[in-house]
Length: 110
Image (tube, rainbow, N blue to C red):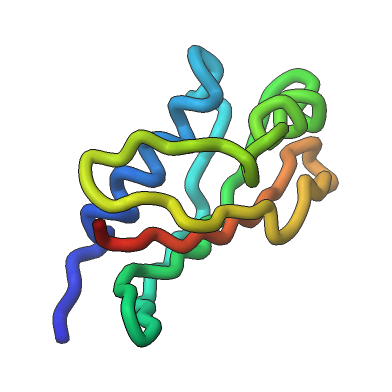
C-alpha cells in the first residue's frame, strides 16, 4: 500500500510536539520520522518514531524543558488521540553541541 510521506496522525503529532517548544520551536529539526500501522483486537492506530536535533545556545537545557512531562501530556488532536508517548533516547549531546532526541508515540483512532 502506498502511504503518504506523513500520515494525518503523524502530521498532527509533529505540529503538537513543536508547539510545546513555543517561540523557540525553530531550534528543533526533524531528522527522521517513521510511522507503521498498529492494531489490537479492538483498537487501530499508528506507532511513530521521531528523531530530532536541537541546536542553539544551551541546547541541553532547552531539550530538558521541551521534554519535561512529555509522557504525562495531553495532546488535542483533530481526531484520534495520543495513547502513549515517551522519550525513547536522549537527550544526547553531539560533538558539535547539538542535542539528539528520539520520541516514540502511539496514536489511536477514536
